[in-house]
Length: 336
Ligand code: KG4
Ligand code: ZN
Image (tube, rainbow, N blue to C red; front, top):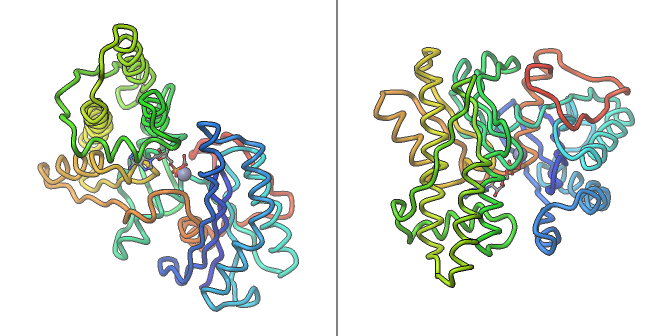
């Protein structure tokens, strides 16, 4: 089975061909980071325009590198939700036209389900059910992966996502966009105990997250220091921030696993590239004898292979779309 996956939900135009659900034959990613960097964040209209310019070349390259033609494909999968609406519309319209002209099934994929699938690409034997923490620039979810295509959201962020917290604090420290990776690098030579940062308390669902208080605490700390003419050690602040985010994500995920009886835990999403989060969740799982899975680093960020992989499972489950498929900016995983 050969599935082409197309991803355009944010600032990466990506396409990939995946064989038999888990074998990546090609994965092409055209990133717009350099352009959005000038503005300190993603500018939606610029993102849509770049997707429009790049998508045909990216898809063509993915087919060429996989040494397959459109006729060889069993289906065309595309991210249709959630994400920037103008960006999603480019991928959806393109995939729809391609599927209709090549007379191939069109397969809709939820972006977060795609992130979860990165662990199938990394671990050939991983099967549901298990619990997955998905932390990215737009989402922080604890998800019960009931089957390849059925999900239950156990916890979600009430405000900012973990990646957003990394990026906004990084910006306040003067790091370029997207700042998460710069915080990670600076944290390597910092002291995680240098700054005591707040752990949020969230009323109601104990597995929900909140990162806006932590973000505000870091920004205030920097402003106060600036006003007093004090120098803040950015390596120490990065290490403290990374340590705090890692602890929050890990403690809630472990509590959810214990409460629901899962002994199999996975990590996914852009923030799964973070060395502190990887180490903390891995150690906590090891300590309890849980199986732990996390994607190889090159699959953590947005890519087409995750869409092709999840698209393969959707296709096998009979999840396809007709020519009325539309992009959706906000869509819970439970509504797919
Ligand atoms: O999944 P992703 O590529 O896009 C979304 O679906 O949002 O995630 C991007 C997020 C950004 O916030 C980025 O700063 C963060 O993942 N990120 C990291 C690291 N690498 C990427 N955050 C912390 N440490 C990293 N090493
Ligand atoms: Zn993503």
